[in-house]
Image (cartoon, one colour):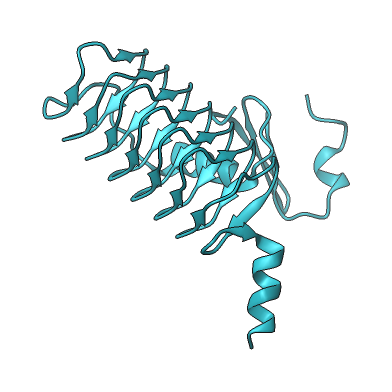
Length: 206
């Protein structure tokens, strides 16, 4: 339920009211648009991505492509899509996940509910990916690392083995993550560092 006069209390030209990612309704007011979704989310990049997917991307229906390999002991949840030529070893994939083309997911990986994985992603043994996260194209997650909830791993990221990435994280494109990242942070670079430090060091090099 929105507060009384909610649109008029903000100077923003548009308002996103995060309530899960699936869009429930779009409200139009003079000079403003309010998008209401399910479940809370605090990562604005992830929220925007989810809304963009819902509004503009035609996702494949849940199924396992006939060219994909699934280990006979893999556990696959409901409403899961696994794309062409992906290899799924002995692992656990929860409900509502989307795994794109030519991914390789090794033994003892655990993938939580509503995780989206882009094409050509390599996920090594014993990795844990918690719910509602996005792992984008050409990323590499090395053995025994952990990705928290509602976390965005941009394209071409490499996460070193045993690294723990917290909840509500943004890891920028091409980052090489060698250290643990605490919750609610944005990191970028090689080696990856907090965005504020990266921008400062970039300014100092000028």
